[in-house]
Length: 433
Ligand SMILES: *Cc1c(COP(=O)(O)O)cnc(C)c1O
Image (cartoon, rainbow, N blue to C red; front, side, top):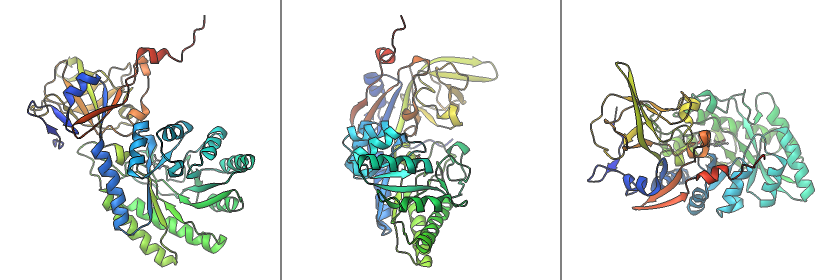
């Protein structure tokens, strides 16, 4: 097992953003979610720079379901990029954070009337239409409000990247988007073009998540250009924006060999340039929607070690004070992670153990084979690359309060989400007596 590149101070404590993780645990308690803000900024910058270097007109839209809090939307606002939201709650949070509405794209396969009204009232940048019911519903809302809005059509292009089936979204049999092959997409574009209250700026597809190859994106770029050329010929309409979605893979363990944003983007740009030349189209504006790759590698979950169970000649379980309530991905789709001992970063490793959570489910195992030093109660364990779909999927299962979230940068720590209290847990409960 390869050691991840992490830095320790003289005491052997893991440093994140120049801050001692042992001090973080003492100050804020555990479990604790920590984000290295510089890593988030660098990744956003990498996407922007590569798109620019390829001479593309572009937008990077952070897919905020990966981690959606006021502080994160503020960071997005600072960096100048756009954001995707998929619910009224995410939209509300983004607006609370001061993110300009025109930089927000609203996604979702079943947006409610209330959510569409909220989006129209806020004048979000674009609503991504997902199905025929939604076209009708949004049309009704716009008529009632005597409003107009920008829309995109989400298409299901029939492209299947190699990834877990729960995180594939581009195949024909998907709950998302208008199917291209059966002609639903053609029908949708004609409907939308006939609605004067909707301005159709482009088309969108998102083929899946945790993708490690360029091929799916190249196929998608070709397919979207072909659809654009086809619609030009048949409907006299050319989409200005081709949105390729997100899904750029990250490194959770040694098994993962992610490509850099630059590698993805160089291939995507080359595919676009070749195909538009072939089809006689102008180069479109290209939008990308990275979620996981922006926040995933920057996040760390810190836990304190508690009980231990050794089954003679079989295996050992080391339990920590968190688990599926703050990171459900291992239980939900067998996601793998790597961990280190944050208070003895460079201690020699011993035989792997099961890193267990504290929740009442046998499936609450954070890491099946955790390569750690000999750990004792009170030691601090850091699970790496937890920044995407960890805190954002957190729950109060077993009535455990959700952890605090801390941003670290340049040796400074800032708490950006407070730890829930027991009082928070019963705040919405109403007496029955
Ligand atoms: C989830 C999602 C993304 C981001 O996917 P990641 O794998 O986190 O990069 C982008 N676009 C849409 C429409 C999504 O639903």
